[in-house]
Image (cartoon, rainbow, N blue to C red):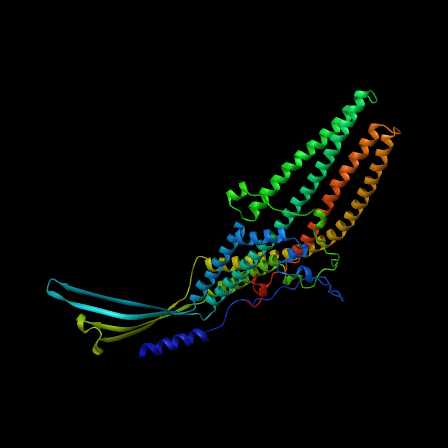
Length: 469
C-alpha cells in the first residue's frame, strides 16, 4: 500500500534527519585537589546503608522506617516520576503521530437535493527534526531527570543523616538525664545528712540552705532534660513518618547506653579524588547544567524552518455501504514549510535567555563542587578534633570523680567546709554532662563524614543514575 511506503520513508527520515544545533555537553574543567599517591580507604562510608557502621539495631530500624514512610522522601519520589514522564513527552515529539479519521454527511442547495459523502482514513503527521530541536529538548528533559533523581538522592542522604543525628541527640539527652537523676539522688541524701547535722547543732543553717539550693538546681536541670527528651522523641517520630496516633501513643524504643554505640577506630584524613561522582547534590547540579546546555541548541534551532509532513490513506464514497470497497480507495500527501521572518526579537531573546541560564547553572555547579570539598574537609577535621575532645573530657571527668571522692572524705572528717565539697560536686556534674555531649559530637562528626562523601548511594544500589544515563 502506498501509505505503508510513505510511513517507512517518514521513519527513515526521522532516523537520518539533519544535524543538531548548539554545543555538545562537556563537563567543565575545574581546579581540583591533586590526588594522593596513597588513596585513603573510605569503604566504610561507601555502603548504601552507611549507618550500619554504628552497629545499633534501633538506629537501623528507624532508618528503615524513615525510608518507607517519610513524607519529604515521598514528595521527592513523586518529582522523579514527573520528570521521567516529561522525558517520555519530549521523546514523543520525535516520532510520527498516527490517528484515525472518519465521517459521513450530506450537502446540497436550493437547486439540488444534495449528495452524501462518507470518508474513513488513517492520517499520519511528522515534523522533520532537521536542526535537532526536538532532540535537544529530549536531551534537556533527560538532564532534568538526572537532576531530579540526584535531588531525590540528596533528600535520601539528608533524611538518613538527620535520623541518625536526631537519634544520637536523643541518646545523649537520655545519658544526661540519667546523670542528673543520679546526681539528684546524691543531693537528696546530702540534704538528709545535713538536716540531721543541723538539728544536732553541728552546722549552721547557711550550710544547710546551700546544700538544699544545690539539690533544687539539679532537680530543675533534670526537669529541663525530661522536656528535651520528650521533644526529641516527637521530632524523631515525625522524621521517620509515624502517624499522629503513633506520635501521641508510642515512644522511641531504645536500649543500652550512649557509650556503648560503636565508634569506628580510624577515619581517613585525605580528601577523596572521586568525590564528584558520589555527591548527589553535585550530580543534581550537573544535570541542570546538561539541560541548560541542550536548551541553547533548541533555541538556535528555532531560527530555522520547520518542515512538517502529513499523509492520509483510506476510503471515500457517496454511498456508505460502498465505503470500504476497492474503487473507493483514496490517499493524500502534503508537506508544509514554516520559516520565521519577524518575531519581534523573541527568537533572539530566547537564545540569550538560554545562554544566560547555562551561565547561571555553570555557576551553581561550580559553587556546589566548592561546597562539596569544603564540607568534606570540615567533616574530616571535625572528626579528628572531636575524637581528641572526647579523650580530654574523659580524662577531666575521671580526675574530677577522684577529686570528689577525696574531697568527700575530707568534708566528712571536718577538714574542709561545705562550700568546697559543693564546688567539686558542681564541677563533676558539669564534666559528666560535657562528656556525654562530647560523645554525641564524636558520633555526629562521623555522620558528617558519611554525608559529605555522598552516603555511598550509587546506581548499583538503585539510588541514582549513572553519568551515561
